[in-house]
Image (cartoon, rainbow, N blue to C red):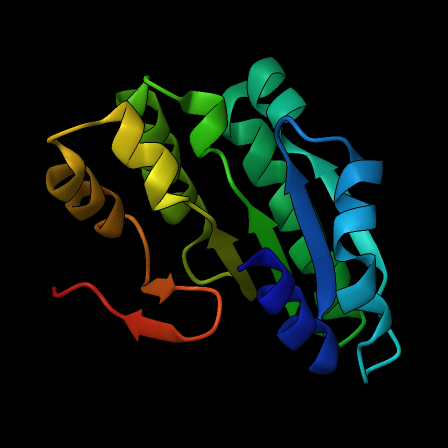
Length: 162
């Protein structure tokens, strides 16, 4: 999903931003370099944010500050800001903290000119939250503008009701 997201974002001239939680920049760069380099836009620079560190030092405000600066940089260049970040492994069993984080991001970034994709691997989550997946996914959907269900080949976009 992240590769497809960055492929489309790069093809449309977006400022590409990867919000790191646990994985190192070089590992991410190696995994995504074929997609970024094959971009028809010729941009392809992948910018990294240490969101895990910002969260640990300044809570949600630290992460919001980083994301707002990226949106500002992209806007100054007349480009869309496209951010991928996945925090579900970082929060793990602490789903309440994770959903509070997502809710605070939603509030703090409302109306900002950026596209933020929060990746979740349902297989990993279903192991952590056996029997509670539907209620957890419903709660998470409430903090997002929309949900993309992606199976590696096809995607389905849905907006939450209300």
